[in-house]
Length: 504
Image 1 (tube, rainbow, N blue to C red):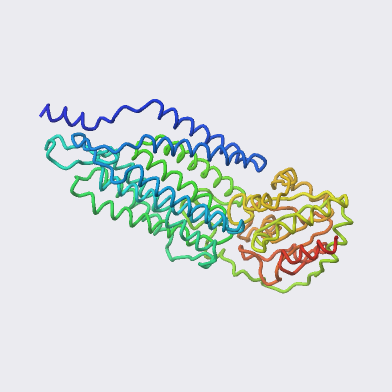
Image 2 (image 1 turned 60 degrees about the vertical axis):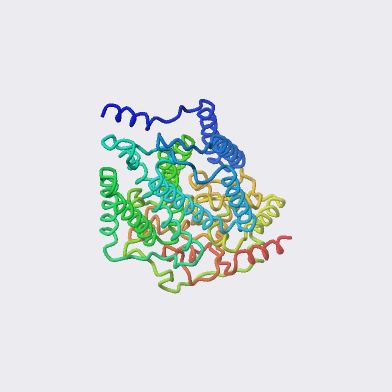
């Protein structure tokens, strides 16, 4: 028996780690940190993206260079199914698909694209976890049971099983949740909350069952693990679906941020299974930064962070709005010529973009209008709400695409005090983020959410398609009916283009 135990211990010993590999992964991790730092500001976002690309290139090249298939059966290392050539072919196919999608996708469709990419990260984690379970020798986690010697099939250490179970669970939740988010963001699924009876108890029970199954999977005998890992995977796919369907379209920015965090933790868990330092570092950075961003978004929307993790936040039965105004109140309607005349007479204009601008793809026309106003001596600033659009920074991305100067773009806390000195608040496609009900109506589903103080501006221009809709929160907006508000009812792009013609 001592000889068998000694051989067993030798079997689990991994080959010594090449110090140059560890150094390369460390360098890639540093580049990822620099990338996050750069992405924290629109002015440095391009540099941050380049740092991220360099870091990923170093990590991928290092992994490929050190990919040496082994056939050391005495250490239960199984020959790799794919060699370097096949891996390079797969990378080339993926690169072609990615480049094609990136070139064709419109900037307004970035939220659903991000959700789709998150789903692929989750699915990859699930597939890697299952591959490690079915062929542990190829991943270096196989251990021959000492009591049976080398003639028996390899088993997986309990610690590796925990890592594997967590990776599969988080990956499955990320995949199914991201699929639902993609369907809602792309309009293929109804954006309003889908509220199941007793959903909170169902979600809690499913999460507890996943935790219990993970523990049982780690402790079970080798021959009893298959039913457990199958049940774990199925329940994880189900809970991802259940967590996202109760969330309405207005809360999608937080959902995208949350799923981004989940995808990072799934990658980190798989990094432990694979013994890959780069994956652990990258996954931890993405997971933690996504969690922090989710917290910031929740605070911006007056949501509970715990409620976000549990799913179905902001989707109480009583809080789901119907999306239509409850009464028809008198309002002022103006034309593009009226708006152009008053805009060029102003000294200071603050533009508040929202999802309606993204849908109409009006960002380029808006930039042209701002340029004309600045040529006439008007000070123009852009006010960006943290939850405007369908993903974090959606409006920043669209304005950057239109080459709006970064120094003209301000976040809510930096510009809200300036509305009292503004001659015009120009609202294009935004709604809930300018609704004063968030400050005055305790019964409102958006009560407590910080909003722009557009009601303090001397003149308000509000571009929306019609008076019928009242935003995703389903709350009528008193700004529509203020004395200083002029409604410009039209497609956002068409209206701004008409204003540009009138200014020119």
